[in-house]
Image (cartoon, rainbow, N blue to C red; front, side, top):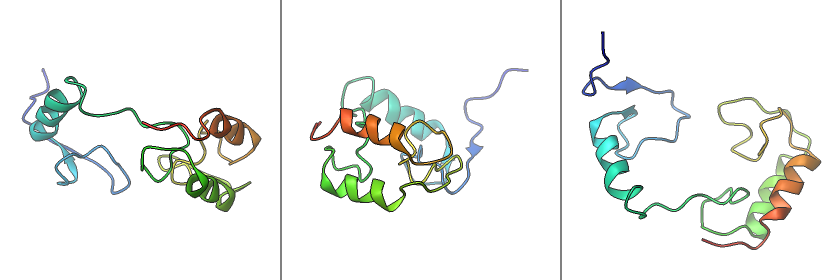
Length: 105
């Protein structure tokens, strides 16, 4: 039986994919995606931009150091600081972060 597009999928509280803040991915979210992402209005997040301000800077470095060597689990992965989702914020994450140092959208 095909899945109806009008049937919403309930997400956990930590999921960040909701555009209309209902806690569900529904047709309004699909419309938002189609109108914005496909038209180029949504920019890809830079890996290492943990605060979402469009640049990798000292604020993001501070967040990385706050989680340094911390164990992490999905879906949150230490608020996104565990960039490679290895379960720990370490030198691999720092190297990925450093590749984008001072980049901006």
